[in-house]
Length: 484
Image (tube, rainbow, N blue to C red; front, side, top):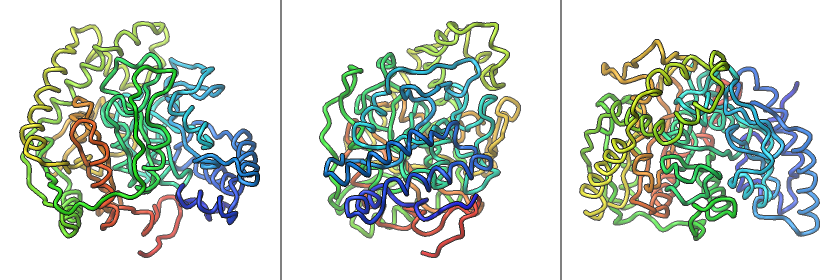
């Protein structure tokens, strides 16, 4: 199959401009991306289903809407959907052979995107029950990173991150209960936003699960803003959606803004390329007038990750597993059995997680927010070298510059901000590492200070390494590099 790459890395903002001007057709863009998704399904393995016929029919309707003047804000924009999210009439397994359903209603985020005119065209891979920071399972196999096929795209929204990096969609949906938006955003060189809990309406039945949120992923900062404005706020199916004032399309500069930077949010090990690229990003913010201040946060990422997962099992996951037929459990992926042996049947402590969340909040408040520091910059992941097929049940540690980190969540810097769940966090690309993998930083704001983190990210987007796909494309999917 000859693949049309003309639209592979077209942003949603630019696509909308072209559609409105009549310079390009939603149908042509959709055909191109569907062909591309089929072409790379074997090598990258980012898709669980390609919904060609329904997507093409909806794209034809989008063309009609542009002709008759009834186009909606996201009319004709293809969107990759994380397989965990319900789309009426589409199979959903959450990456497991133990689960299969066909929802009759849309997830609130999907409903809002469709009502805005976006077109779901592919479903993207997840690990089993979205429980790990890689994307592999017995159900879907191994998803690989388009930048380096030997490496993981992260998880659990790894298929969404890989789809964006491979040019299968301009925007994608994700969810995040331990870093599942930010880890793949980091490893795939894209943007991901973990909203504060309540900013988006939760899926019905998940309203009490405050560690977990849904959010947007996009290759460009402007597309992240576009998508967040489409999905945030209340939805009649859920009682958690907060009132939302749309983000602006342009943000004030960062002159005079105090921004903290911390490199010690884990166990001390950090990829030198990640540190260098964050330092360069901070230097670029300084040139725009930001006041960069070092912050000491000597956290133990192994312990934080363990306490978070214990709370997640205690809140709902152990009870959910107990409802599944025990006779079917042999179908589970090895890491599901490992996690069950580690967390099921014990006295999981929700209070331990609550106490840790309070301690983290108090430390951030004392060292940052109460001192007038508006945002924190810190690593999203501590290493870019996690193999796509790493078996975390047997490979219990990963080496990060001579330091051992737990192979489950010890190599990521995301879980603290799920515990302090009202803090908004953007994962933003910062450049490339020596192994060809992207590097990333988190931009963390005080509780519900969404516009502050978008303001910092907007300034960062003007600096080096911020939007990789304007300079170089992933070589692993056969796209030639393009000079800056």
